[in-house]
Image (cartoon, rainbow, N blue to C red; front, side, top):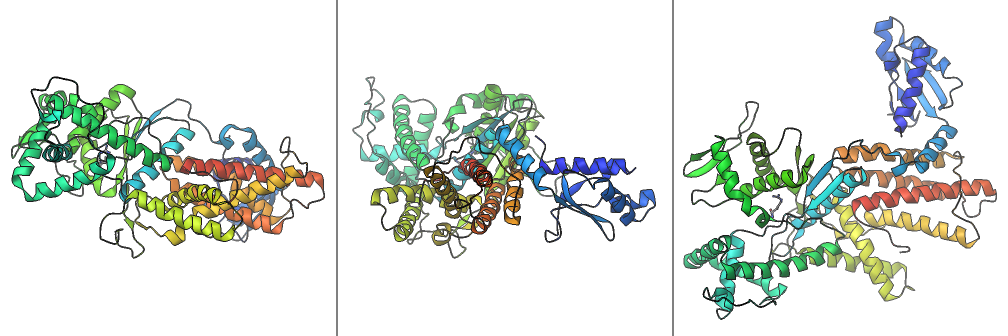
Length: 589
Ligand code: ARG
């Protein structure tokens, strides 16, 4: 389906052509003077020179051709030569009817199915999820849903940090604490226990302890490196322990991500591609890309046009160990082989921008990936506290994700109980979780990803202003009007939209009409914040309309059915949008 601006422009181009001018001049844009008009066309100004005519005359002639246009209710040629436009209520209503009838409210699906891999979440095994992981998960989940909605085949991969020294550290600490376990006995040939010899809380305590010890005690660190080496070389007991660490940690992650309504298709990690490393490194050497520099193996990734220094991509450290970049390169190679993606999108802290710049360039240079595969890094900013400084707990630590969610849910619960004293506690708790999730996600996603933002529980949980709860409140309001309508015997079947009868109604319809245009940009720019901005405008337009319009008490049944149809459409669009942001609305709140 055509975007509304294209449909309007087409009408305008026809008029320019009929008046004897180049139809390309008929480009229409949104008005920058909404007090005067809804749309405008500056084509007459642009054509004045070519046709050696005063722009106002051209504009006048074009306006004349549009006198009986079904698209416009007003076409005014104003000095020095602008065309100020208003669309007709019937045209707008027909456009919305078209959206209702079309798939995805008129958002076009690409002709050829393309594959997108979204690499997000990126938690590290055995380390608790903290506030930084919130952003990757929340933004990634939304980008994934947007791409899927746009008609792409999308694969979300968590890319666990599940290899390397951190695993050796944990194994070392376990060995100190429970040396009697069979895993450390290299002569043991029996079956290892099915149960992990630790719980998630132990695991989460073990890692920081081990990491602290290794910083102070060189012998301990030595041991951890040795254990890492053993693990990476497939020593049986170490592998078995690693399996336990992964399964205990992943079970906990799943629980956390589920609470966030975040779902991965692949639970791959750094360990997944270890089998590829040796060959990949060999190929890079053979191809003449990788060379030795100060003992390390590196690939130059500088380009002529660089304005800043881009250091070489290190493939192997001088001790022969692989790095974060090495696994990322191998992962690209595996993804290309298995899924042949058209786009790979990575969502991490923006401080990793250089890492991805190097990895992407290296992958292209060494031909791990073809020129037609897009590699995109979306770097997000820091989550700050209310004071504008990086978020810290009272004792100076990094806040755990679980605690953040808990704080928001508690505050939401308090607010809900305050305004709804009759609500049973259990229901209020459930609703608080649903609304709390919206508060967190909207609080994050409404900012452009690259920007830092302040995690502000009071603001995020407010029912007023640019917040998740406000959007949900609007949806709940519509749901309750529709329920009332049905209670009074009305049916939601066979409703027909009607042309707007008030300026507020028209304004609401104009917002709805922008949906498919907005979605196209949100996808092209991987920008969930565009959806937030859109639904905030839409919710505001709806609430203004709602306050000025009698709906349930409207006596004219046809008019009433038209209003209800508009409510249904508004609700569907809002619900579609919040689903793309990764949260949902309760039935009441
Ligand atoms: N585990 C990494 C970290 O904590 C993030 C992984 C992001 N994805 C990737 N393919 N590098 O920083």
